[in-house]
Image 1: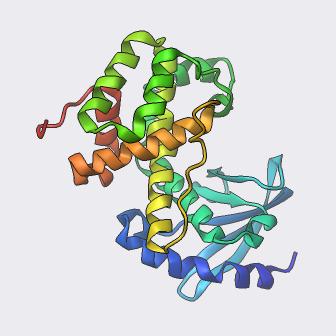
Image 2: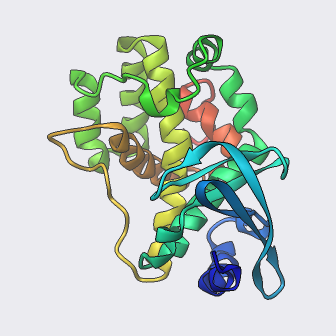
Length: 257
């Protein structure tokens, strides 16, 4: 791997990240970028002139080509944006990296504390199911969820909260928690990503909006729409993402209601 070529390829990211400070304060902070090849992670850190290669770590697993993720790396003692070389050839790849920076920010702030309080996480942790966020068998065909998902773009904040309240009463606890978790985590990252895409006059990411075949990405699409409603209801929630989680979960009511 030619690290200088990677540094050159990453050169647009810093400028786009600086511009994204208009979207959210999370982009004022620095986040590492890891380029994964097999079980090697080549780490690039932000410098004043761009991202520079710093070191390579060996991971306990293989990084599959096409991976776009964010997870903690022991040597960094930090959450890292993880992509593979092919990602750098995609148009507007910087939006993918900035999306993963959102997850790095969530991890640094309140994600671990919030997740630790969820029954679904506690069950998954005790059974060593570390992929629960990907493989949980959420009932995507549940009639109440189907109705909610298909109508989300037409619901206002209050109707959305009513629909979430109904789902809380009809879904099993772990399914409801999973839905809220994905809306909060992936929905927020999609929401910020789409703000950046709009700022750059690029078509938004609406993956998961297929009404006939909802799956995990339908929660990302739904989450993006709900975060838009949260912003309209109380713009401060976009910065106070921990408070926003409790609003979504139904444990906190906005005084503006």
